[in-house]
Image (cartoon, rainbow, N blue to C red; front, side):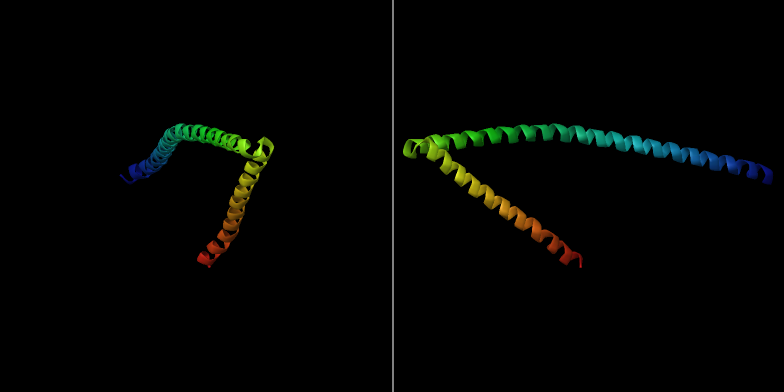
Length: 115
């Protein structure tokens, strides 16, 4: 009986290793399938968001053109374009300044929390 146990033990260990490999491969296939399903769901949502962003940009361009046309009746087309440009440049500069300021203060706050 001791000889049977010695012979069966290596076979059992080999079978255990093979079962572990099979199980690991199945888990990997399952994880890939889940990731692909999530990617497919996110992909269609991301496409819709990009389309929405493009349409919003077109709407903003229309608004800017409308502002220029409305001002053109008061101060002329050249000055109207210049005024709208300057206002948008100042607003863009303000957002850029705020963004840079916020980014430059974030590493310090993270370091303080970590330290």
